[in-house]
Length: 519
Image (cartoon, rainbow, N blue to C red; front, side, top):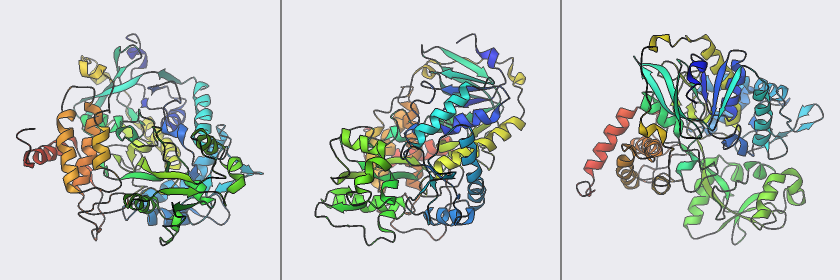
């Protein structure tokens, strides 16, 4: 690897190879770009696991304005309306571009076959192979990237540190398969590193998704926004498997219902019932489970005998776990699924740090607000990747101003992240419901981990920022539910957080706790 940096000098570096990263690299073509993938290209990405699809107003009876209405209604007052309108206006064309790149979406003749998911007012979810949308998107985009000569793919390579000089990005420290470090001098970096599921014990995400992009950006000096809003999917298959298998919301969209051990539809009272916004359904299930009940997703009537045909991947998942969804109710419970917060970006994906962009789940565009509307995330990534590429292309490329700077990797940069110590802390404190005591205890535990040089420091820092953000939001809104602050404030305000603010607040909390002196 040591021979490579000068070959890649001044090229845009895209960190991450899910939908956001792959589309950004493709959209940059024919400009030469470097794509870093910590695993083999397309592997270990949340995109590849996505059962749901892309939400876009493609039906004759649908419009971007209607899509925006549903997004605003689900977002708990925190959706940035202008940004959301722009993204949703562009979503139909993004779907068509993916199709042109080779994604085989399900169709009815020439038209896209559209599904229904929770809190959508009409059918607008584009799928592939029933419930394998993400896998098909990754397959097609990986093939397209492999065929694009301007994209240099570095597989098994992970970004460990962003180099900043004079307040501007100067390079990326990377580590390859043999733990050999190199620094790519560049003034343009795009973070597309995905989410935070690996920080939680119970998640539907890859274990390797540990908030790497959040830690990289924060340590480099970028601002982060709305980190407290963590979405829990209501219907993860309740087995011992980790990560947890997901039973897509589309199953409820086709008529499956939630019942308890008595057969009662215990969420019938919610407006929309099983198709209410995800935060409401997740809390309803959590409360029922906390009351000593069991919870099941009953698909025996609808989709019934057609389950395996409509949802072949979920059918295999259930049968591997010993359940026949056409004949048996499926045990389910909430599990961490998506992060609405992330690196604060503008409409072109630019962060507060010059030379740093973010795209996909690691970014906070304002589209999702306090509670993501189902299937808006893949559409957001596809749309914003093209805008990020346009912005990167127009930015100054030369890093020659840093040519005389010697940038060496330190020992901490050579160690992969380790979230084992973080998972139980976040799972206790930042679950479906939170409270001050739990959040303060988590902050006190995470602070020494986050400020250490151990491999756990990166994941612990990401977790610490989440906990500090959740402590500072003294209300309940969307996916952020505080038992000690059960009401929403009259005005919805996005949160902004820096590394310095995180550490300052965390130290104040740690010193204020009764056990601080002995800890």
